[in-house]
Length: 169
Image (cartoon, rainbow, N blue to C red):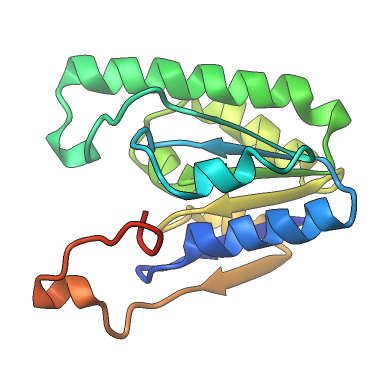
C-alpha cells in the first residue's frame, strides 16, 4: 500500500519513522531513503540500533532548492538518483520502503522522475511504501491508500525559537 505524509506542519518524518519502528517490532524489513537531508540528526543514532531498519541518505547538506545553483542541483540530482537506484535494488528483500522528503525532491525536479514513478507506482501494491514531504503531486495522491496531512497550527520557530536537538533534529 502507498502512504503519504504531507502538509506544512512538523511531524511528517517523525510519523514515518514511527511507522518504521512499529514495522521493525513486527519483524518487517524496512529501508529508509532520506532525500534532501544531509545534516546529522538525532534519529540516526537510534535507527542504527535496530537491525531490521536500514537507511541511506546524502553525505552532506545541499540547502534549500530555491538557493541551489545549477551545479548544486545537478549534483544533488545525481546523488538522489543513486539513492533511488540503490533502494530499487533492495526492493525484493523489503517489507517497507520509506522515501523521506520524496515529494519535495520530486516537485523540484531533483531526481529522475521516470525512475521515481517506477519505484512508487509499480511497487506500492507489493510492499508498504511511504512518501513524506510537502505538496505531493496529484498522481501519487490518486494512487495513495493513506494520506495524512499534517498542518502547522503553531510552531515556536515563528517566535524565534531555534531548532532543538532531539526535538526538531
